[in-house]
Length: 293
Image (cartoon, rainbow, N blue to C red; front, top):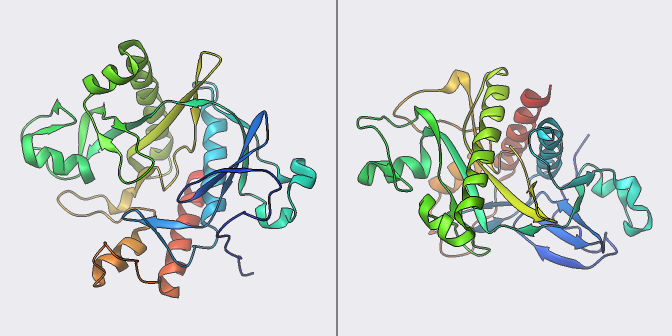
């Protein structure tokens, strides 16, 4: 069966669209929010064409799965994920099945809570420069993709446009207050450790990940998404090596295609070939299968 890609839910939802991100769309239901996860895919701050069939369902399904798994250790914003309960608010339920999440409204804390268990990606580039990551001094002699002795908390200031800004913990504390900064750090590390241990049982390495939090009536809750290929770096255990660029279980086929093209990253990107789209769909389906059985 061919999966039909969803590029937008506009016109399918009879509620005000209040935010359209690179992948998610937020609709105002009054007391609650409706989050629709589309199949749009982005790279280097551009939304690419065409969308990747099934990607949104995987992201939404994984977030829903993880929110349920972690609810006992960290409250979250989820109310339900059943499109049937939306009734006449949705004109074509079949197109949105598996893609929606009705959530409590929270005041977002404008910090991206990043936890790194391995030194790779942007953390590795920082370490190469000065031996630190977000102001945290790490041991000398680490190699690319080395597992850290203890996971580290490396926050970023959220920007709705462009890249988020890596900041030291002290800067985060100055922005949100020391008590809240410490609370978010501790909760993030606890969540990472849960996800790392869970993934390890399925022969997957959770190299790093990011969380977003909000506040409802003074309570800190987890929002947005959780342990998805868009918010976490997953490595298949069998592919783990030092000193190389490990093929991560996400949109790596898209990144590889763009890196091999002559695109200058400053103009509209080229359309993705069908084989790249298909390979990316397979990646998302594979990580979903391995994580959820």
